[in-house]
Image 1 (cartoon, rainbow, N blue to C red):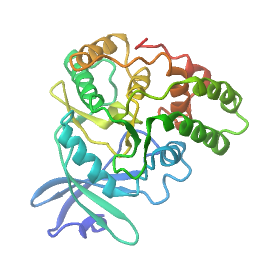
Image 2: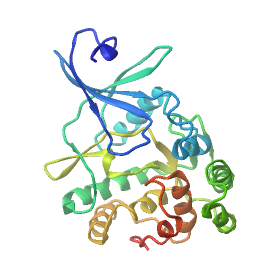
Image 3: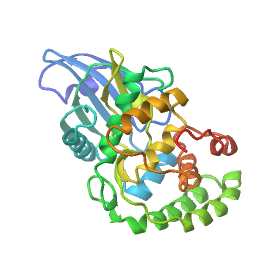
Image 4: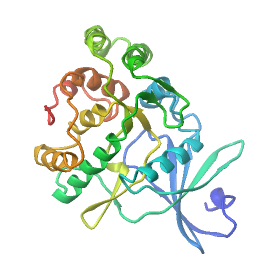
Length: 295
């Protein structure tokens, strides 16, 4: 079993353990690898895994995201390291061959979070402070952190309308989602351009974080980082927090900056997140009626 990854190292691989992110549809395989020098993490995109997936297809069309391009992981983690909002693992090297590419990363301590609900005030306050620090990195363009896609803020909502239509035609023909699309597009047409963009995770989820001693330890799953309106993170947190958790998050966030207003964009951005299946294939009606934690 260790032979699969031996070519990445100059010394013998002593053991390797498959790490699961805790959900299906992930685009990469991840291993914990031990050599005489210590323990590291290896990530490798699954060839073709993103092709029939609404999330990865939509992110490619909108932001140019491609999980096969591991050089992007180096760019993203280096950027996040400089910003200092969360600890992120350093990418030690990327190794590519005709069959597959691999990224070797440092290991960071902690246990993967399975939920934000029920976590202590300190951890959720740190989550708020960290996201606010990312949101404070205000940009006058949106796109991919590599700069491969980079466009004016005035172009974001028109491009969003095009991609939403394409997602529906590709994945949701004959569903209630297609029936709802014209109303959502009409609302989207009335929205002003975003005030700014910033680094954020379209797939924000507790499983991307490690905890250590009741505190937020590190952010370890970063391949879906994009430059987009900060309101997206608050839309995602409507589905990930309960009311006490939202209060702790808000307390941490507002130590850095005011919460961005989300009421005007909530319906449209929620609809996009349902198209991308960021929390799975959920009933559209229930998804859109989720309680609003940040009114």
